[in-house]
Length: 132
Image 1 (cartoon, rainbow, N blue to C red):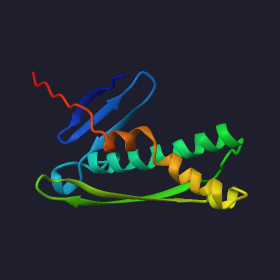
Image 2 (cartoon, rainbow, N blue to C red):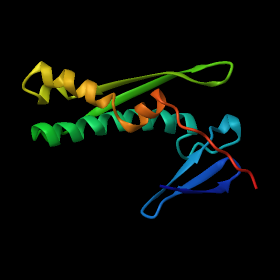
Image 3 (cartoon, rainbow, N blue to C red):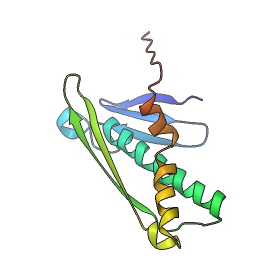
């Protein structure tokens, strides 16, 4: 799996795949133009969207339930030494009303927490950086 990133502004990168592209940009106070998510926002959104979509996929596959109008809120806190995201909270809305029992709603929560991005945070990958 791979993506291409290309600088398209002083503090802006375009992320490109074979099928789509989007912009990652810093906030204006950091010299960016705020025309896309910054890396921290993208990271939090990746966690939240992975958890929601994993739960939605599970509901459809396991229970034949095509969940609709699901929404989520994600918030995060920064930590120091080293600077990082120290906490991410995801709240998923409109799931419980679509299931006919509380057991499935609890199962959705458990399944969602097993998404690829969340599992990666639990078992960090090897990281490599090459600068040319």
